[in-house]
Image 1 (cartoon, chains in turn purple, green):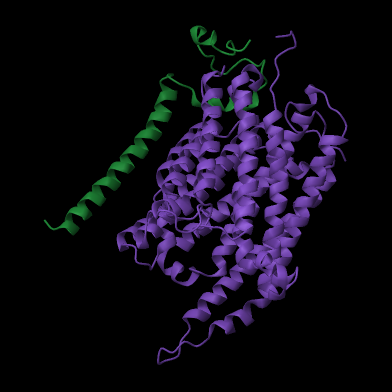
Image 2 (cartoon, chains in turn blue, brown):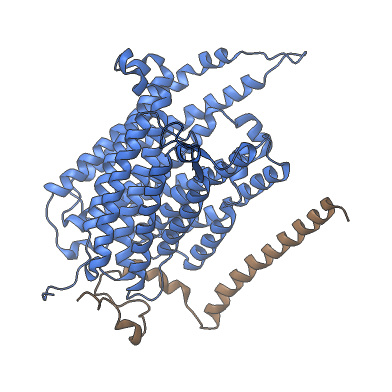
Length: 493
Length: 73
C-alpha cells in the first residue's frame, strides 16, 4: 500500500447515485404518462394501435411503481448507505478489497435485475401481486443482491473504528432485515412448469397462499414495503444529512432511539388497515386500525426531532435550498404519517377505500418525503464525492418551488377527487338505490385528473432540473477544497 | 371462561405490559445519563465529526483496533 493518506472511497456510492437519477426519471416519466392516460384515455394509444400492448395503463402501471420503489428509492438508499456507512463507522471501503468487490458485484447484479424487471414487466409477465410483480427467477436474483448488501453492511460494521453505531446505521440495518423477511415470505411461490411436469411457461408461478391468507400476507408485505422502503431508510438519511448539512447535532439522541424501537414494534402490525371491510377476521382489521393510529407517535418522534434539530438555526431554511428540501421532506413526513392513520380509521376508510384519496396519500409521502429527502441527500453528497461545488443554487431553488407546487397540485386534486368519489359511490335514494353510476363519477373527476397530471408533470420537470444540476456538478462546477466541505455544502450561484 | 373473555384479558394485560416496557425504556435512557453510565447525547456527534481522521466518539478498544483495516494492507 502506498503512503497516501486514507480517504473514504465513494466508487460504489457514485454508481448508485447515477441509477438513482436515471431510474427516478424513468419511474416518474412513466407515472406522468399514466396520469395523462387517466385524464385522456387516448394517450393509451400514443404509439399507435400496434404498440398499444406496451403503452396501455395496465402494462405501464407496475413499471411506474416498481421503477420508483425498487429503482429510484432503492438506488438512493444504497447510494447513501455506501456514503453514510463509511463516514459514521469511520472506515473506508478502500481498506477492504473484499468489501469493494462485494460493492461492485452488488451494483452489477442490481443492474441485471433492473434489466430483467423492465423487460419482463413490459412483456406483461407478472405474478399480479402489487409491488411484488416479479416472477420467481427474478425473485431469486433479488435475494442474492440483498444478501450481498447485507454482507456489505455487516462487513463494514465489522471493521469499523467508531464503536457505537450511529442511529442511521440502526435504520439501515432495520431496512435490510425488514425487507429480507417481508420479501421472502410474500414471494413464496410454486413454479408451475416444474411442479406440473412441463405445463406452461418455465418462469410462471402461483403463490403459496390463497384467498384471504394471500391478501393478508400481501398487505403485511405491501404496507411494510412502505415501512422499510419508504420510511425507515429515509429516516436513516435525514438523521445523518440534516445534522451534517446544518452543523447541528440531532436535537435528542434519546428520542431518536425511542422512536426507532417504537417504529420497529408498531409498523409491522398495521398492514391490516389495507383490508378493512374485507373477509379478514374483524379483530385483525381493528388491530390494523389501532396500530396505525399508534404509529403517529414514533413517526412524529423522528419528524419533530428533525425540526427541533433546526432550533435557533431557522435562518438556514431561508438561506439554503438544501435545508429547504430536508425541512419540507420532514414536514411532509409528519403530514403523510398523520393522513395515513386517519385513513385507517374504519369510518374514514369506509369512505376513502379504493378512492383517489389513497393515491394522493401515497404521492404526498413519496414525492414530498421520500424523493425530496433522497434528492437532498444526493445534493449533499455531490460536492463531497466529486470535489466540486453544487453547480447552481438558483436552479436548486427553482426545482424546489416547481416540485413543491407539483406535489401540492397532486395531493389536493386527489383529496377532492377521492372524497367526491367516495361520497358519490355511497349516495343512495330513500329506497336504497344508488344515486350515481360509475361513469357519473368519472365525468365529475375529469378536471381533477387533469390537475394531477399537471402536478406530476411539474414534478418531472423538477427531476430534469435535478439531473442537469447533478450532471453539471459532476463535470464542470468549480473545484473545492476539503476545508469547504465541513458543514454546509458549497454552491455556485 | 370462553375464548372471547380470555382474549379480552390477554389484550388488556398485553397492552399494560407494553406500556410498562415503553416507560421503562424511557426511564432507562434518562437514568443511564443521570447515573453517569452512558451519555447518549454525545452519539449525535458521530455524524458531525465523521472525517476519517477525526477522533471516534467512542473508540473500539485497543485489542479490537488491531483488526481494523489490517487484513488487506
